[in-house]
Image (cartoon, rainbow, N blue to C red; front, top):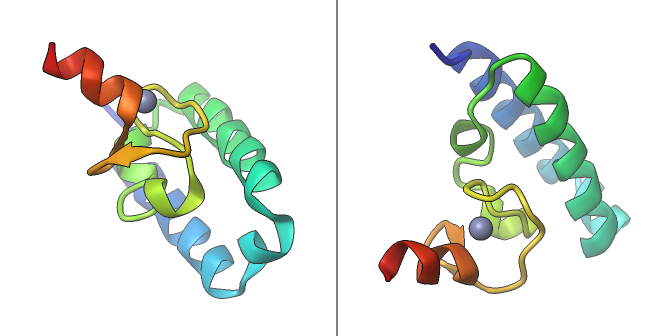
Length: 87
Ligand SMILES: [Zn+2]
């Protein structure tokens, strides 16, 4: 049983940070580290990374599926996950 409301709350917070250009200010690498820390924290609260990063993962450079920073995406997941799932 996932914490859906918590996940979507975090999704909204991340979108608001993005709208406020916080991630432009941080730059890619620090954004990826920050988002990774949020995902680690959210895991403890039984949140769903796919919901947290909905419409955001590619923009923030973090794959919701493996939770790792990624530069290349296929759809909403990183290239490595796509290859792993596709084979
Ligand atoms: Zn991945």
